[in-house]
Image (cartoon, rainbow, N blue to C red; front, side, top):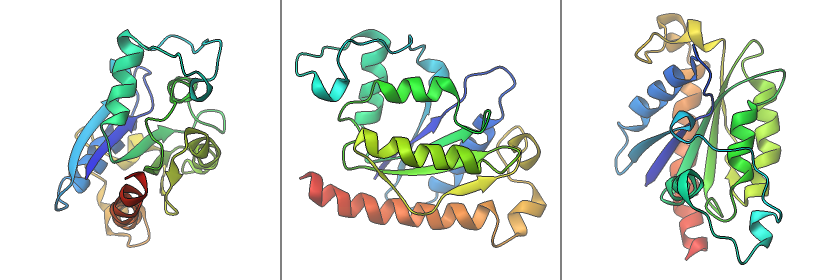
Length: 192
């Protein structure tokens, strides 16, 4: 399974990349899982302003960074979105990136890891509304993380107190990865 881990924040001083490193390390230990990090900092997407919604535009031709972003998504069998919670939602840069998506995530599973003062709960809730619009499938389990700057060190290692809690982020990530693998297999048969 090709698993893309999207870093959904581009701001200076972000800690979302720490959570993404942690997820990539854990996912990388699974059999038959190839992990690719997809960092929105590498895709300086303009604000979406296409005249026709991508799914309804048979004449659509993408180029440059938009084409690169969409190709990165299309190459994956499943994705994990790692996002902070900004003002009770997801960052605008992440929503803007998703507005470009047409069929690249069609019938592919999406897992969510969110962090923030409310453990990212509202960001997760908003993503669960956005994901079906991209024709993707949100897996049932998500990972709720307290403020990521305190949850992970610079290299993405989960702090000891959180790591030893079986009901905390570590257990949730293991369960979500199980879902992603199972959903990926099931949805691959549908995509064929």
